[in-house]
Image 1: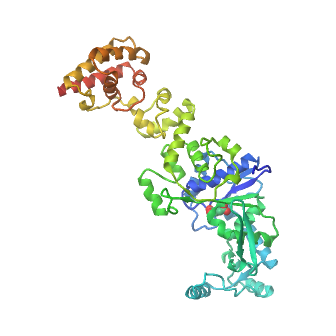
Image 2 (image 1 turned 120 degrees about the vertical axis):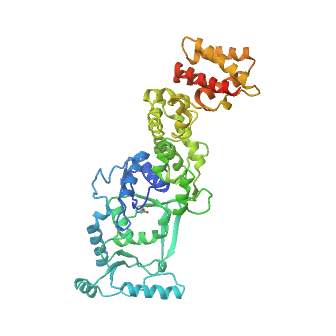
Length: 496
Ligand code: GLU
């Protein structure tokens, strides 16, 4: 099903904690639908619950969206025709709408005290009934209720959910869902302090903001019948409803708890967007990964850029089944996107990771190193480990590492001395100039070239695995390479 009409969609988080993969994916799908239809992607901050609101979480949210590259066209910071986009600044709008429902006989003032509600709840628990409002104030004459409100009596506004018959709601992924109306509770819309709750605020906003598709987490599916009743009570046309699958922990067994999320960080994995950024994942890799956690294009294609996704995303191919978080796939996608980046762009992104690792990395050198490591790194954070030797003044390699396989210390030292002499004799140390004479030297020594190169690699880079040896030497520079080889020779001589 390709969307042809301009979709107005919103990402409507409650900033109470750090932004995680699930929110990132909800934002992404909304963004894709908006952009593929020439519509609008709106950010709305659902901060009606001021007790749980956390300004750091809002900051984390906006930086996560910016990092992912999913800018919003209406919302905080950019404004728009339906401002304000903070629910806490729209309370008067909700109050008026709650009153409108009361006038229409679709909502009622409820004066039950917390103690009364508690007693009812306990009785219901004992009778093994699901908790629900007793109905006490539901049919109070409106004139009488208004008098009590005017007299200052504490009250809330509750929705007067229909009690007879059933309702059939439609989710684009899951089809029709029918529930008995008697199972729908008379939920509070407006609290006694005048603050609106989600069920009212989100419906009013979605209507006033002309939202055409509501893409939100599956945890809201049980509330859908209530929400459709609220739309109908106002006489508003419904948006399309799309409830996205949940994410399961990597084992596939259940959703991740807060404690497990924290524990996961200790293993070097995280479900939080800003952590993934700090760990050296690319936004391109993360987007590709989360795009496919709940959506697929065909069975073959796995590499998607954001423009590809805008073109190919299709809500009829969303998968309602829960998806287990698979970090191996994240590594896989990140590797693909690292290799797809132009080397100069990759170099620009690597620079802060070298700096974070404590290297004073010259951007010009990083640019030259990048093509040598582009095929070898999975995250940006791998780069300092693989290529930090370019920036270290020396590499302290233990002499044992310089022993050539099946050769004595003296033979190994003789080999290194010969290699050193060959390199010293070269007018300049370039990869092109060095390789052939070094192979010839290995032949003369009766050592396999690979074995000699391993020794040289250890002496030059301090590691057994490195970017290509002679290219690395060229970049490190003649004097530094010769100094490292001399230091290695010194260490080896002491062994024999
Ligand atoms: N504020 C809700 C949440 O964070 C948003 C649900 C919705 O998208 O309507 O879960």
